[in-house]
Image (cartoon, rainbow, N blue to C red; front, top):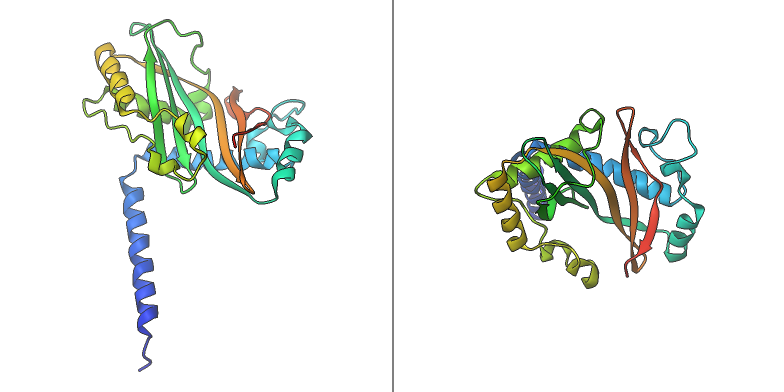
Length: 248
């Protein structure tokens, strides 16, 4: 009988246990988090492709052309190329917001979901403004993107729950990004608790609104923010042109 080296057995066992742990982690995730991760990974790829001047997934593009993500300026690709050729996605931050429905307002929910490079979903501490929202809900969003609509529902449900157990982004999650950027991200448990207190006392019904989405990438030794915006047109989720901003 052929003897299998002990080192190979240890490696195989570790690999299998790691895969089992990952499977358990995915099983514990809210299905809406999984749907959001899948969408945002595709969105991030489209934004990075547009920023580099490469073809973009057509589902995020206007069919007529002339505007949107395919109109990203060539200067964006030139700026990235000057920093290096290897672009790595660090995380993607998308604004997740809601306008209070009739009979439960006034109120405006402002939050952000963070999809890390490994697919984990974390949240920035949200806030609720008890005033008439300046922007209404995004028309057609439930049909265009159940994943984004689900993210707003997920945030709303968690804030209304007495446990207030929203999984915030932590300093450990962003220990590898520039300190100045990490410090600008609202990760305060006190701010989260305040939002939960307001939500519990208001019985709000939030109608979802989506806006900017920002992909933080590492290019060479620099970190760069690639920003776009979601738009819904004819029940299709589209992306605006990409803008670039150095953060380090």
